[in-house]
Image (cartoon, rainbow, N blue to C red):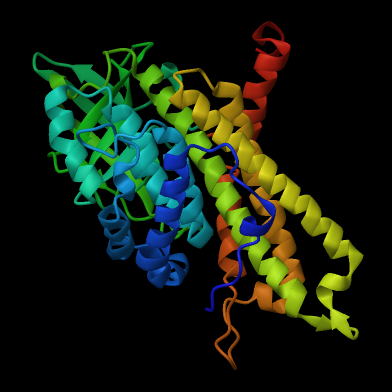
Length: 407
């Protein structure tokens, strides 16, 4: 498909971003065009399987240095604002493929925040594998009966302490990259009757680990998920991430960052849908003139442009707070909930503007496709995973009204 103009370059300006972030955006945009775009439509359409993990795009983005962005030297890019840069990369990836942005979120936002808590020998061994794209990694907290509520009593995956470490038994569900991953950061209940959680780095080649059949989903088909089943898996004591019993702290720290990344992905999806919609409004002729001459769509697009700019500013502000070493829980929740809602709103209108063409995977007679069917399927999950948007609103409400009232 011929590239369409980016409206972002006409109506939005990164006036306050650090020069290194602007450079990362330009670099990421070029890398996505060269290493992801040729595979993106196939990634978005093919049914999930072990064999369909998007290794070509995955390793291509790594080769371009995008997996190094979150990490300090000597392992990574050593940026002054790594979270802001990583979320900017996520936005650029999501512009081309929302599901590939989900892969990037697991590999380069969630997992890195757990690896900073690993023992130095593990960091020195595994971070270069992650950065180079030689090994995929997973972040595993969700279980069949718990997702947003990750308190220890809700966890059925149990780590029993032994003389040399842990024996882990349980099941994790909806785990990104699991079909291809070599390692997973796994949140476990510390002891069968424990009231605390521990995060462990588990070698997925260990005896007792089984990776389930890939889930068949409405969208995000390139973000392949599957259960991780653990049956008395031996994990050495040195594979604890953080301190024993402090796994919830590690997990929540990662999830706050992940929420900002998903908010950034929502912005990327919304921006892509906006650009498709504007091009259609300019070129589609109805009743003797362009569709864009209708005031209804003029006002709708102006509001969407405003919402996208607000969503972009929210994720950038939240990321910058973390880069400054400050707490950003309410801002992260706002960025995630707002950015993902905007994505769904803009995609829905973009489909409407394209009519039947927007609803079609492909026109049989011409082979024509505008990818909106894929984007429509993909956008919904952004409002659900890494903490449903209702949970994000609750996080904001607790800060706003007080936990003594909200619970």
